[in-house]
Length: 522
Image (cartoon, rainbow, N blue to C red; front, side):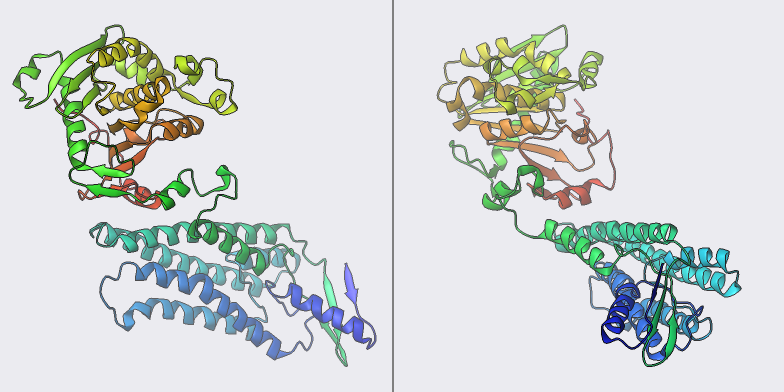
């Protein structure tokens, strides 16, 4: 295709100049047909590329480095970055003045363009420009990656709570930058591979005959596209949540309640259930009973000082080795489930197929609501629960205090999953129980899908999942399984994070995933 302006028509001249500026932004300019192209235009183009290099490489590199500077730093902070930038700018000048080729802004795109041009017009300068430019770009990315890894290693040595803003800021910026650079490089290379070589020529008449020929990528690969992509990602993560969009379009389920219902912490609490308050003495009580659930029915229970606690009874399912105990303190009833201890338990753990909630809970058998039909739970956990549900509820209500005292449901590992199902069942049978019910699980795996989570969180409002950051079991089963309730994350540095953000969890769980962090030693 050829766009040729012959004559001095003002409209045609303006059209040609506009076309030039539209396509020249990402264009490597060669001297083939260049004629007497203004040197000023070449200089301005190189200045623009250098400025964009600063925005795309220099700024992210410097920012990644800054997150590990815990104390003021001198000029050496910029030493390597300025040296690399100087090499890049010097190479721009060499390309424009010696080789008569203007390199592109998109990383690694110049190499692809130059190789393709070389195939059509074998000239060594194209290969030199492409290879050296790619080497500089690769070296820059390697230095940026090394700086990122050093920052990550440095932050690992710091207290997460003390430097939380740096940890979270670094993780967020790295997440955005990584995806942006992948998008940028991928689009640039695809454009360079798909663009026809030699198919476009523009002749601009500006008082005298000058020919301007250059190679350019598709219009879609403009700076506007990448600015929109960058700002969309940033806005999606950083701007406040809104209820005016569908749930799936929000940053994540629970974003609105998290923003509107701040979490509180107390060492001791009243009998009344505070849905958004983490009460330490209640969690300690839950932990002790979750531990006792392993001892109940064995000789080890005789070695434990129960203080004011009383064990009202045990409920067992011998066919699946499931066990739960009902206890009582001076202020509440406690139901605790034993976790995985036998091979039969493990077989239940790995049955990750789905069971529809209507087949698990009698109260939902005839529920035809769309959300109820879509709500599903782990089939292994549901089979284990159904084997003891009737007996356990009978044992609980046989105490006579279940209608008045607060009820605490707890368990570790498999016991945490069963505690989740039991609490949900209690609230389905009697919604008033939800006002007195609290759930605390330790190292619990995921129980159901997102529809189940919505139904559960709407009914059981006080549920804390206490997890160790390295515990790999709490990350299983994988999606579409999701957790219910609020998370209380204990980091490897023994910090307690209540209802942490996704970034908090990611930062503390990315280091390692260990099975030994899950084990209960009796």
